[in-house]
Image (cartoon, rainbow, N blue to C red; front, side, top):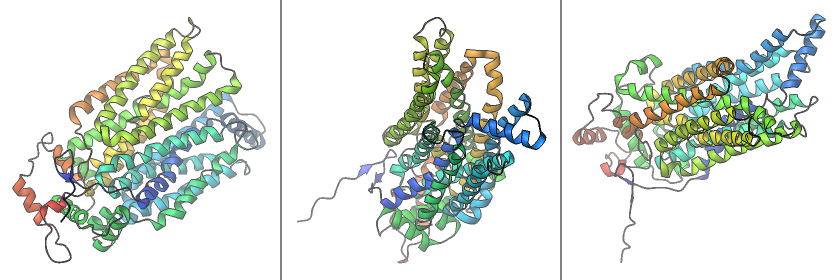
Length: 523
């Protein structure tokens, strides 16, 4: 007697969805891809904080040896500002170059090439002190910014294209989790007992070579994005092998058929330029959504929160020598929140986590403003201020810290994805640079009320996402694009047109078109 068929689970779109287990190949691609990309970016966000005094002393010593006089205060400030801000300039250059590089080398090839930037930068930053050249530190930070600009565009694209839709958010959050781990590792290694000493600070930058080398050892043995191989390279055999390894099964005809259908749905199957993306009304609101979300990602105030952390701890009465250890709690909370977000994103969805994150940040920024204004009058108020700082960080990492990168890959179909990531990267790095440039002036004018500016950004971002953004959880790229059809004033294909589109896709190798139901795959 035959066993009854297993009940199929339904996706949010009402379609059956087979959920395969996560394979080791997919986890390896997510972890090692993020280790050599996101981790390095996060590490660079925090690595210059601990040795700041030693780096400034090195600049002054080098200046005296060259010119016979110490640095003036204005020159010292300028040199340090260049050290910090040139990283963002490099990030912008990296984002601008992504579309061109990825067209030639693909997703995996670009990630592999990017490791060369990390290794060169690590070498320059490590040897700068021995060579008595602060210019080497500037160039190293610039190249490291280029590495990060490329990584933050290519990695989310790669992860989104290799992952089944029912775990696309979970795998995509590896980007955010490894960024947070990188920040935390930078804080840990910067402790005085480790590398945060005058004689060891250059080794903090040497550590950057390790994750790049690990990625170089593993990534060549992992497949390229099957969507890239099939749609852009027309390599169906290569795409089939890639799907088989990522999914851990031999029969991947459903996945291949869906990608064929997606290719047929696009008027232009070749990679679109940024100008073509900007001109296309069919993706107008997707583009607006990504620009606003990515701008809020940088302008929501998380970068500015670090300015207050050490000061609040001093006001709370903590000894100066233990402040670095207490500051580690920020990195730990950041990492824990990112991990929790990755575990729940497929249950809760992208939209609720984004709205919750920005809304919670607005609430805790408001409370922080109140507590800062009463900090001098009540001895226990600084402790509440520090709790608010931890809450802001946790709120950010619960959604806004990683989901904007996932959405950039989900809201656009294959031909527009590289251009979309390029625009998102430009917005990301310009907004990052703007915060670093303007916040000191905002802080000077508004003092403790400076955080109210970020409250406005978070509230407006939450409202926009609530009104415009559809939920993308467990949907195919075509379904997500069609969910914007109404707001873009583009006619949605009827069921008959969808059937015709599917039947027009490329036949399978046995010469027969697959049954329509088979296209409802896990991708």
